[in-house]
Length: 249
Image (tube, rainbow, N blue to C red; front, top):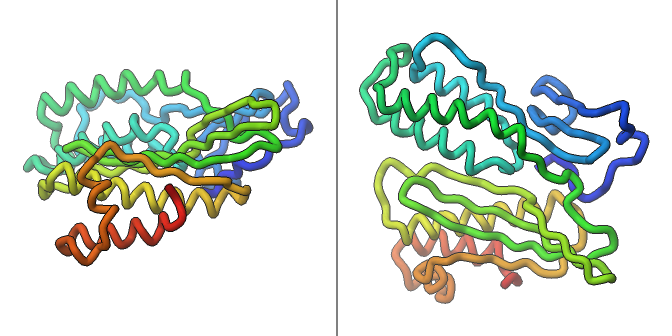
């Protein structure tokens, strides 16, 4: 959450002769692994995974996944696919340097080929409208394979212009020990509560209202009641969510 989103950069840093700046993990600027185009004020992503003639192994796949650096979760739906694949590899009894089974190899090669298209994606670095009323809308969702949360900023200025942009997201691979979808939805809601709290602290702007959204009727019912009426797993998470979302809708 170290990327500053609340202020537009001066024009001196956005001259047309500085088409793009590329930051690496060894630089002090906290936009590691992301490309910034100052003139358009865009953030872009580029795949750091290189094509290899060697068959993929557990070690090489894990190394490649580690190169998908996305601190704000702006390409989380892309990254989580690789993490789900890696989780499946953990369940297989293959060595670190053994070629992975053919089904995994095929899926990884398809993923690798599609990953090049990520360079076509860009987001506005400056997320807000000047002198606008800002709302935060945080969504939580889950599936049997993964769960996640994302926060959008909705800005409306005095002329009635509205701008909505993704600020950040977080995703997690579902645990190997299977739990119900309802409990995964609750875990997603916990993730959403923490994500919103971190974003609100990081952006340092006046937020008029915060809204939380879930399509899980079970989760919403859990959150309407005091934690002590539920089993321990649910009670602990309901308590945490209620604490972090106090005063929100």
